[in-house]
Length: 338
Image (tube, rainbow, N blue to C red; front, top):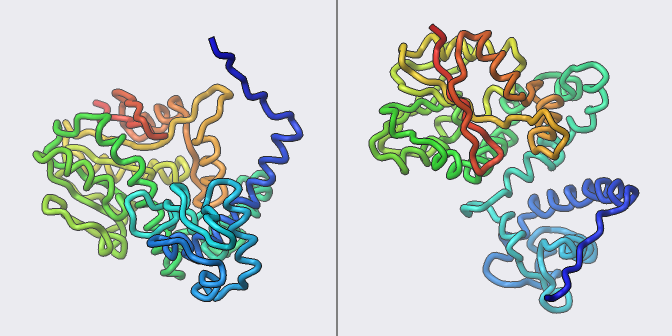
């Protein structure tokens, strides 16, 4: 039998160094997305001087950026000073099915709000308060209202993220049991549209802020309604989806949202919460890191299954089942407690 060579685990100091260098790499990635380098390379490889002219950058410095990103598989130098896309840099292109361009810019670009908030993580740990509010003087949602371009990038980023998770959510549950599906805080309608495409017997209601639903996708079986889920939730659905909504808010704010959903529900209606469930064990979990983003930016939190059960019970719901998906999301199905 051929011998297999195991790769040794990094030494402790190597692990710390790699995490630190991850910050450098993420900022370089953000600048590449801002410059739209992947879009410029979509049709053919280009010389650095040509890229510099098109991006209005300093050619020698642009080369250093591309060279560094090439070392981690993003872009490829196909001949001296000539660069092309790789499968990874293709994900930085805009308006392609696998794009994460807006997601990278929303999370890592200066001026978008979130990048600056991470600098205040220490303050959030010391006080429990949102770093975002301390740094900007108002909350993230107000920031998006005052900075429409940042708000647009954020909405696009959430759509990109949902395009990645939607197929797993759609295929993990039999949504056909519900005639009318309402996606509350459903953004641009990516998840709901995916479900409607897979289950032709269903109709949908997309509910979000008016300026958001105006930009949403169009679907012949989807009604778009603008509003605020702290004020009301539209009636008439057989299941209400809260996709990445509850984790944005504190327990008290979440209870208000859940109460509005409950008021809209019929006796046999179901609630479907799509969120990460944090394991109560020490292994790596995407949700544990997302939880720190929730702490610093919107002030919400990721929750364990036990915490979800307690929150739902406080809102008058009973958790019926938890459905795992292939994405880092679970579907928590709940009914109104009798």
